Length: 297
Ligand SMILES: [Zn+2]
Ligand SMILES: [Zn+2]
Image 1 (cartoon, helix red, strand yellow):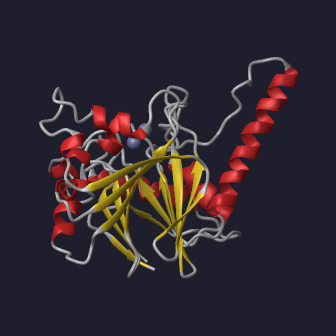
Image 2 (cartoon, rainbow, N blue to C red; image 1 turned 90 degrees about the horizontal axis):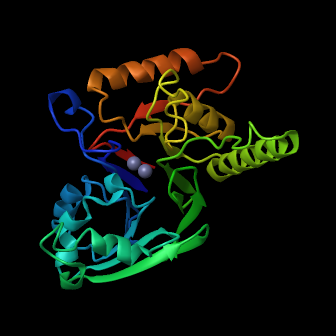
């Protein structure tokens, strides 16, 4: 399995000299399994360059694109994904079920003439849309994709991809579940506490022992204060605690804040190391996601 990062930035593209090292494109990750269809996670602005790269790889025909959710930063590159315009490609799109509209309606709306000059009906590739829930999907001969809902202000899925004993989890736009009834009466408060605990434990099980855990860690511990709780993004230490509890082999910090410069990101990583490293426990290696960065498993 090969994992390649094309966009690692959250919220809005942030190009410029201060972000050139880690990159300013919004989320897009490619997962290659030899002899199997290509898998893409999210269609932030990073997907534009991935699309151009795919045109240079004649063997690719079958593409499976999974959306974590449909916030702008995860869909805004889709209209610029060139394979959509070429009849040779078979492109299957997946996204979490939405309470008011389906995936096709949401993605078609961003390609109405008001916003973009080419409409979904005019795309030449063979395209299909799938609204999905927590489930298991087999891609090609033998690639297993498992999904899990995470905690974000809109329905959002995490994806686990497994093949030949190797595993990768992509968990962006998530913050730990919390007790939503902390201020209610004692009984409701206890129920809320239990629900949050159960949901957080289910995530640990979902991630248990994976080789690579790519996870939202947009904020430092200090930034994740009450003003940001509920925005659907995690602190580095919260994501690290999840990674350590689940015994993952490596954690990748993802969905970088658009205001975080390259040097700030390095500082954030070394601060995380300072507060999390423990001589008594297994420590998880952590890296920062970076555009054009490849992982071979
Ligand atoms: Zn996002
Ligand atoms: Zn989001």
